[in-house]
Length: 344
Image 1 (cartoon, one colour):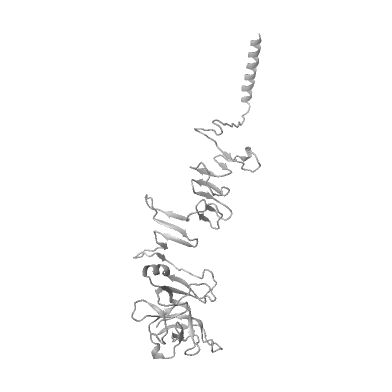
Image 2 (cartoon, helix red, strand yellow; image 1 turned 180 degrees about the vertical axis):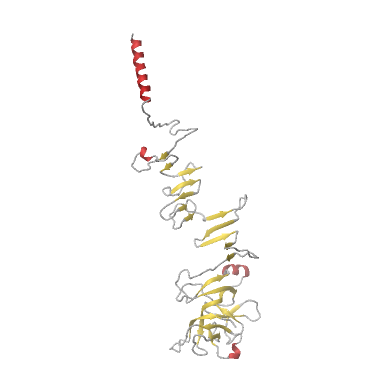
C-alpha cells in the first residue's frame, strides 16, 4: 500500500514537471570547476558572450552580455599564445596581446602598438616600450624584409632597403628620393633671426672655419678649401653655411654627411653654400657696403669686402650684398650681412 502511494506521488511530480516545461523556457547558468579550478571543453558554442564585468556594476549579470548575436565582449585583455603576462607591460591599456605584440587604443592614438599613450594616428612600439620601432615590408616569401621604415635615436625616421618615391618616378638611374611635383621646405623650428635659407653641400676643408667664412680652393690640392685671405682671390669657392637654427641664416638642404665623410676620407668636411641666401662675414676694407654691391675676398681671413677693381673682380666674386653694412663706430669694422651667393 505504501509503495503504491509513493509511486503515485512521484508520478504526479513528473507529470507536473513536464507540464510546466511545455509552458515556458528558462535560461540556466552552469558553473563548473572540474577539473579544478578550470573547466575543459572540446566545444563551446554561444550566440553572444561577455567576459568580465562589462557595465562596471561590481557583479556578473545578464546586463553584461551583448544585446546582439555574434558579439564577444571582453573587459580585460585578449591574449593569444601566452599563459603568463609579459613583465613591464601596461595591461590596463593593452587590449590584444599577440604573444609579445600588443594592440591598444586610447584618446591620443586611434591604433597603438605598445603600452604608452601616443600622439599619432598609428604608433608602433615594442609592447614593453623597448627596442626600435619599425615597419617591415616584403614582396616575396623570404624571411627577410624588402623595405623597412625604422625610427632611429628618437629623432630620425629611416627608410632602409628601398628608395622613397613620391609620384611616378620612372627615372634612370633610380633616384633615392624623387618628387614628381612641387616640394616646399621651411625652417622646422622657425627660430632663425632672419627667415633666410640656403642649400649647402659638404666639402673638404683645411684649418679652422666657421659659419659665414668665405672659403677658397687651396692651391695645389684637389677639392680642399680654406679661409680666403688674399684680396680678389679667383680661387674663391663659397661661404661656409650654418646648421644652427639660431643663426642669422640656416641651411634648409644639407647635402652629405660630415661625420661619414670624415670616417671614409680622414679629412674634415663642412657645409658650404652652393645656392641661395646666406650670412657672410664682411669688413670695411673697401668701405661701406650697400645692397647690390658685389663681394670679393679681402685680406682679413674668412671675410668678404666690397669689390671696387673691375679687372680684378672677374672670376673673384662670391656673392651680391642684400643688406647694408656701414657701422657708425669705425672700431666695428667687421660683421655679418645676408648675401645672395653668386660665383662669377
